[in-house]
Amino acid sequence: MTQPIATIDPAVLRMSRTIARDAMDAGAQAVVLAGSHANGSANQHSDVDLLIVGKGPGYTLSRRGRFLVSTEWRTPAACRASLRTPSAVGAAVPGWRQAIIIEDPHGTAAAIQRRAHAFTWDAITEACDRWVADQITGYAEEVHKLVAAVESGSTHAAAAWRSILALRLAPIMAVHRRILYGTENVLWDLVSQSMGDPWASAQSRALCERRETQEASCRAALDLYTFAATECWPLLNRSQRRVVRHAATIAGYSLTH
Image (tube, rainbow, N blue to C red; front, side, top):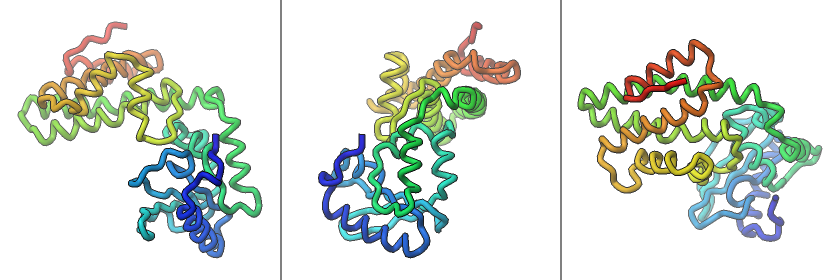
């Protein structure tokens, strides 16, 4: 639910309106305030996220007084596409649902927001399943690289590939579990809650939350991949299963399906 505009920091609102006026003068169709200042979770370190609907310079980051401000121009088509693209929808749908419309003379942003409120996963089920299968298969390469780095004693490389798996498997499982998260600040927690204790424990160790040894954290990242591969196995085609099964094997697991 969108928070009442009266509850937004007045300084944020004034600045947003100033930026919005400049953007409209530059040809924008609408400007919305998104992120933590729109959904009520902002703290003293939160940036101000402004989405400018229209053709423009893309993404910029700047400081305005005490605020870090991010502005991103997106065409209306790109905004609408984010509500049906598996890799984007988890953040885009709640983001648009909670957004505060600052300028919208022709109703462009309001129409996109209505689409977000009407969103259901059923509309993109097949696309989500294909995307998840492709991602699980693709990250088999990171498993190969992590195993090779561990075996060769390449500690920096092992830490990098471990971190990639620990960070990037959660967004995949969010799509598979049909989780809307809005902000990545809560993504890993929500996925852990949905997946249960084995996943939560492995994720914690892979992210080195308790100063795990590198061996333990790398093993945990491989655990995460195997948990994900096991759950998503029914989505994989024959070729993908060969790739994923071999990755699990070199990681020390046997996928028995």
